[in-house]
Length: 81
Length: 190
Image 1 (cartoon, rainbow over the protein chains, first blue to last red):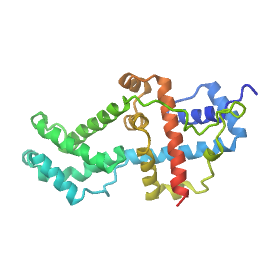
Image 2: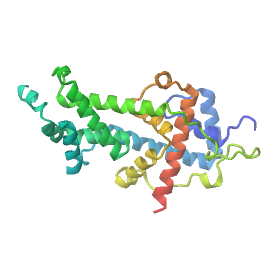
Image 3: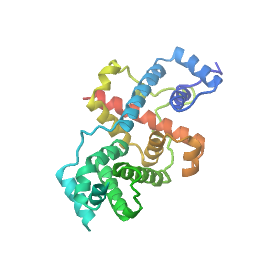
């Protein structure tokens, strides 16, 4: 039992794994924990969903948002000073 | 190219031509309208001052984007140096020694029970994520954003911000715990 990691450690590894490769021991510990923990399995899924969305938000510039007239006027005024 | 050079001295035309693009670029990295507007204003001002340095090697837009990106990174660097401490009080995990490290009952992740493709097209879901990122404490938000925007290795961020590598992992982890919990709360409670 001593070898089992906690949910806190498991969720830490789930997040870390999305940025870098885990060591073999970390991978093994995480796998064992996930087998028996429903909440961490959910955490893993949802953390990945959010991560994908954030990458989309940052890399994809949709041009649908436009500066409104007030914002444009403010900018033009500042630049004229 | 000559036409371009005339354009560059005309702020009104500049803003009309590039304002929306830069605004979108900033908005997708700042997660807040006011900050995005502030930064494009600074970008235009900086560009104005260094107009003679613009060599015409890149397009005007690329040049402006490179200035804006630097402004965004600088903004986060400054914020990330703030002396906020990681407090354990809001941890979603139990601190009691028998249950140590398990999810607190109120923090247990719930099954979102919704297909990924439903979420992928949902503007509202994206707005919620942005809101949850901007709600992070300044220091966390900055480390988190730098990591995602720059895709910089941790060692670089460490040197830059004078934070240890293990601290960066902890900050990224705590940020992500908070974002997930915030998204769940906002998405499923309305």
